[in-house]
Image (cartoon, rainbow, N blue to C red; front, side, top):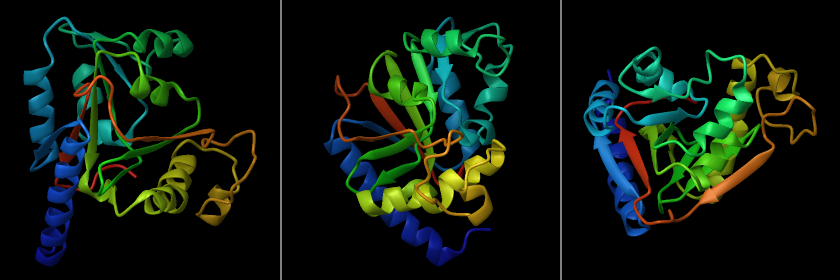
Length: 211
């Protein structure tokens, strides 16, 4: 059960973040829980659409991956069940819809993401007709510096553990600014405005999701 004081604080941050996102030209929707965001996606994405996804714990926790896997109603560009992931990554760049999360979202309405391969960032920046960024309110941070700190102190070390990497942060628990061949921090991007306006919609959930 969420503490009342914590929930009130996060609601204030959420409200401010949504206003900032809209001011910058992003679409922004708020959901009470992860089941409601999944219902929204089912109602919003037309049957027959092609859908690509970025690697994401949030997409797994919200049930998005389970919903799409083997679903005959959509052309799911399934990165998880393929012998040619590189082909799937390239085809996802021209998908009708691309679903992903974000490593951090600042109060002034910027998205911050760090990638290993760059396929997720490439799709966010340009390609898919519509991008839906699903994130729990735990991803909201104060500013650009806080966004980078969040990745270095939480998202990157947690993901290297999950992916069984051999980077220094798997031993320390925080980013060591390494130059390891196994690093998952090869590209970093701040997205301050979508182009065209409204191409990217941020779906904020009033729960903690992902890393």
